[in-house]
Length: 254
Image 1 (cartoon, helix red, strand yellow):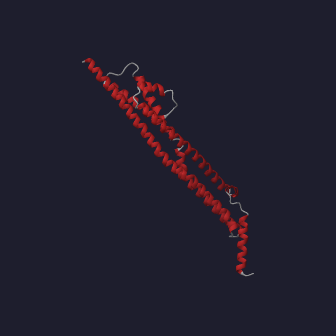
Image 2: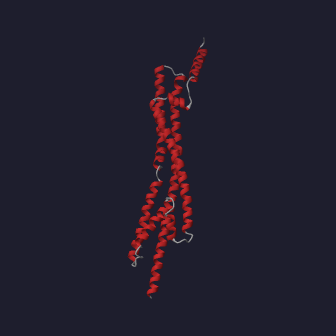
Image 3: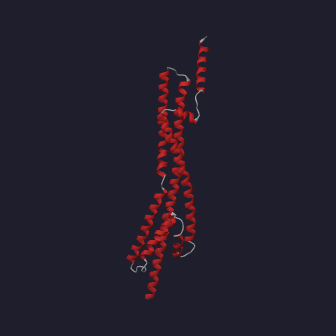
């Protein structure tokens, strides 16, 4: 047998050996080293949990913006704030409604015995109302930002975790080559496949998480600006109400 025939025979044997290896996703997971299995399991969990956060956050932001639009339409419709306040208190919890309720609660508590007469007391009242609404904004934003840290962490670290699995898989491949004293495809392929699969899982987990984090960060910041703008508008209305009250008081005194 000449050298070319012998080489062809070795290659055919190697290829036949690779046919007996399960290169499916489950097969590569089951054949992987324990460390690589742990890496793969972590990445799969991170990917599933990231998508859970993504879908929940998308539905939440869509619902909040829709309800905010309806409330703002009612707020600017000319309906008295007292009636609007009594009506929204019975509604389901919502950030914008909660901020409005917090401001009205402070306003009603402070004016239960009448509006303050001096400018300093009026200024103190406005500061307390604004502070109550700001505290409510902080509380609501804290709730809205839940899950964002996980998305940021997954987007920034999943690729490196997958790379760790890749390096470990390649190390196992070289170990197998050294132990078998054989560089055939049947010896090298399983470890390389496992290594590349770990990298793929890292990218699958990291890419959607990072995109979602950037998109949701922008959406949440816009919603926060919406809450701040509503607070400023609400405080303007209260300030105008106090000014009108003073103007009427001066006309009566005159």
